[in-house]
Length: 220
Image 1: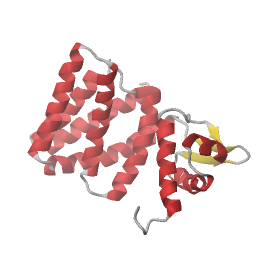
Image 2 (image 1 turned 45 degrees about the vertical axis):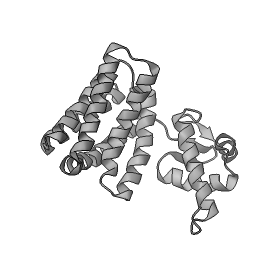
Image 3 (image 1 turned 90 degrees about the horizontal axis):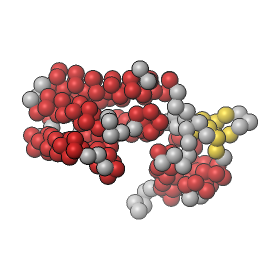
């Protein structure tokens, strides 16, 4: 452990990570009211770390303090869906432009091959493990483009927003067998445009991909 990192800060980061893991696993449900003591039991972290974590969760919009009721986990509502997808589009539009310009040919070819192989396999039969693999490939694809901006502030904001997006997906737009082929095809359109170094086409393909996901989340 680095000597310049206070112990409470390390525990706070662990508590935050545990909270988001339980949130995405639905051990903690959107809209649920929880006490600090309950968070201690759920996360397995000490009360001090929980108290240090709460201001960060509030700043990130993952929890809010309701007078006389306690701590409420973020709810999935129309505003959350609209705001989260708008922020996602703003960040990823810049990310795909820069990635199209700067990504190496080998990395883009690897992305293309991984998507094509998974699509070919799942066109025959979609198993739970393949579905999980597709979901991870989806997340990794977008995370990689954002991280390639090499801007820690943007990556941090994007990671918090991704938690909200993934919460929305768990409720309305999670990866399903019926969605998998279209999602992979949407990714392939982005990757092929990047391989051609066609920035406008890559941005357009990304915008189409995100808009389809947003409309699915809104139920329109």
